[in-house]
Image 1 (spheres, rainbow, N blue to C red):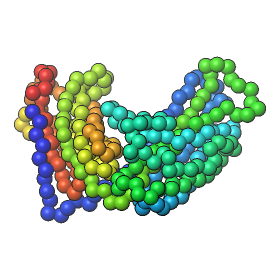
Image 2 (spheres, rainbow, N blue to C red; image 1 turned 45 degrees about the vertical axis):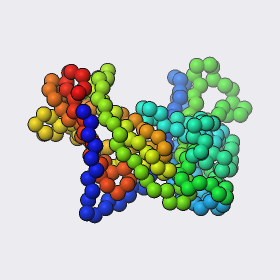
Image 3 (cartoon, rainbow, N blue to C red; image 1 turned 45 degrees about the horizontal axis):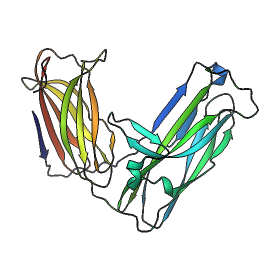
Image 4 (cartoon, helix red, strand yellow; image 1 turned 60 degrees about the vertical axis):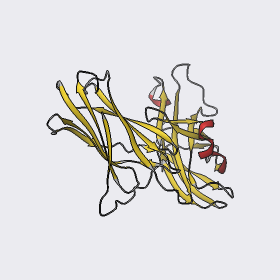
Length: 285
């Protein structure tokens, strides 16, 4: 059974700014220590407010934290978030076209070398076209390590590639945040050192700007006493979609009846309460 209520407070909660997400992806085989790269990026997320027909410029810092020179290549990427709340970066994601800022950005340099234990500035410019709709747009820059020119290549299977990604959110105008906790489910999972269950909270973002929840998620026993309490995951929820947010339950659950309860502000100025009743080990009610 799933219930959802809205709890209004006399003092309206301050809307949390939607922050961008960033992911560091490292794909490495068992390379010798001298062949390892370690790229660092700052900041890894950027939020901008801009009017249509204007431009915004800025700088990222890409660092080489290894003991050897590191070459890199820059890619301009689209961003989406999958059903497991994991960011996905690709050169083109057709389903994100109406929210993509990928076509607006220019970057310098697109390829360069960084000295050992050093850094370089990455300059970017966004040119926001005239007449674009009011909404929050998103895209990303990916920086991928390349083999050093003139250096003998390692044998196949012991090379190392590092990719670091920074994300951008550009809000044009003042889109109103609109969202609701739509559904909660509980399912059994094969995850050692946990309760063996996870909740999936589905949030519907029907607006034109990003949401990010602030609040708590907890398990209550049959008498209403808390068994487990955690912060609601601060996962970005992109516009005009339903985002699944998995939350693994860590506390052991004895056989019996439970309620999973979420109290969360999605940035709309109100606290929403949603509950779901389930049993262990029987199927959810």
